[in-house]
Image (cartoon, rainbow, N blue to C red; front, side, top):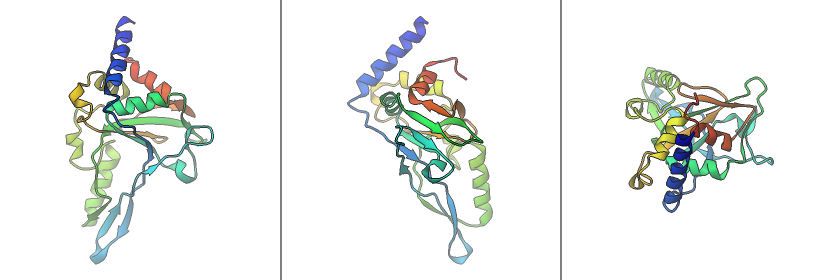
Length: 210
């Protein structure tokens, strides 16, 4: 209990120190890639663009069968920025209105910006990339190797935030934190029907969470 209290106090001190350097981040909706036909029998993948997520009248982000709620939610930022966002919004969270699949999952990987459009030729190259995307909760391609060591669960993200040095707060890895009603490899279930961001913080602080 003493160790846990000490860890939480150290994390709080880290966040307070970094306030001047950490910028405010937003919640986004993740687009679904679309494949289009290009010239000369080529195939073009349109990854779309992130759209800012809007809270419901109940001050919650929703998963639903129609509209923006069908898209996963995404936070992009440094560990300190992500912690501060969750802390600032701890009284609100995510509601899943899907009756058949009420679960809520969370996954973490390194964020690496990619071009919106990419040519995929021949077609089998696209099929290989699609398969790779389904196998791992990391961006497609060599990023799987590059992301080695980046945490895939909540307690490891907490550990990173706690051990962050002042020089790393603004220059550290940018993380891609995804919330979804569909599980992907590397994701963890964090709730059913609804989960508050305060609850997410609690799970991050609980080193026994699995």
